[in-house]
Length: 364
Image 1 (tube, helix red, strand yellow):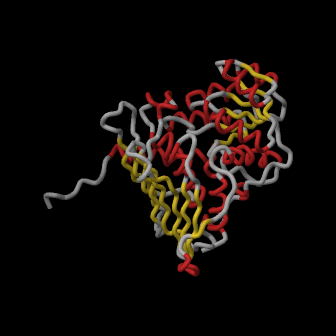
Image 2: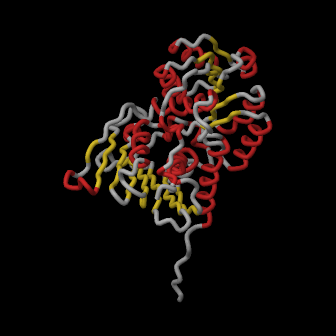
Image 3: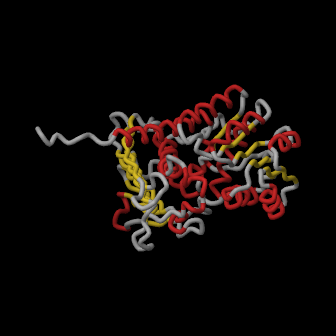
């Protein structure tokens, strides 16, 4: 049992802070930087050296709010003024990645926003640039580092619920896509921009799936792309069911809204309610609960944790890069090379959905 990946998590997932934090150069001053990156770095005590955005007024507003000394409207200018040991935090859509990466110094450290591309070839190009320039490149897969995920990960690694045999993600909410207008014209939406979080999270527990089956559909009265998906992952001959089920069009009130991750094992189960999605971006109640066979009569018990997805998980995703750079962990679990494999799972999901299901043998 000990050889199963969930029992041997990467040491980068412990959420320790770097001992010698490096200054951060942020490229992009959009909503995610405002709502998550900057609050996280302020909470962790990370220094932000500058913010760059084509709209200088946006960068200036955030810089003033968070005491950032420099702002730019040009990446080259930000790079020229950056400290030699800076970590570049590129919080831009994937179509902007390659252009920005080409302007960074060879050998630089960079944290990219996900996804790596709207389609896999874009991710391939991003990976190629990172390899050619020798970048220490990671991807902001922040859900891996959410405080409640860290607690669940340790409980599972310690064998508290035994071997995993069922992992389920269920989301049924009204998602305000209008807050992110640039995604409304994409030909791919739900899996690429949302379920990628869960597919990546699952990989961080179970490793790479050997097969992917999916259906993803749009709403009949909405113009944007797919907004509801079911994705099933297989792991060879391992007896584990893994399902991600999302419905972002549930606009019928909060009574039957759902947003959870559930891990079931041979000795118990863990259920995590992701409150952020229940009232995005303000967020509802986060809740982590545990039930075990040896205390079954007590039912589901609350498990304590501190913090939430926003902003705390963003401390971990930047922190793990800096811990790797200072040598306090042996490898970078969120490297572009690793997260490219998440994008391969996303691509397989879209390919499966495009093929459609197996036709029933009605005429047998």
